[in-house]
Length: 202
Image (cartoon, rainbow, N blue to C red):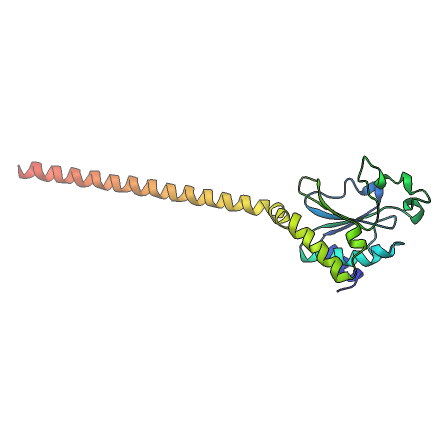
């Protein structure tokens, strides 16, 4: 598996990686996406006080890259801002009327409508190996986001194809009308010529 920094660089080049803190989460992105909560202030994918996050982050980034999905890394704060034996009880990401996170790393799979369609938490934390974690993420993406992202990411091409078909149909219709008018004109001229010949013969 490529290193975290390498994966982050490639995703950044593709504009598929956003790192934010708590205040930037709400307006981070739209459309189908992966949202990963990690143990730091700014959502950095290359440094966390949470060992489980350090193990899970490259698995999520690699899956996002292979599936061409955008990923948002969100920092939940410093260790004391998250741990329940310190100030964690008041962390906004733990709020029951909000996301109600109970651990990190947590991965949310968000659909095109902005709603959560699946969540991975303890599955990532308890995965025996990075390969197991990657498999868990890939299976969730395939089940909930892959087809939706493909539809969402290419609406303009679909509309263009439809427009092209309409133009082609319109062109074909215009050609048929011109052909019919030309044929009708020729037919009328031919009939007129026959009538004239008949009059002359008569």
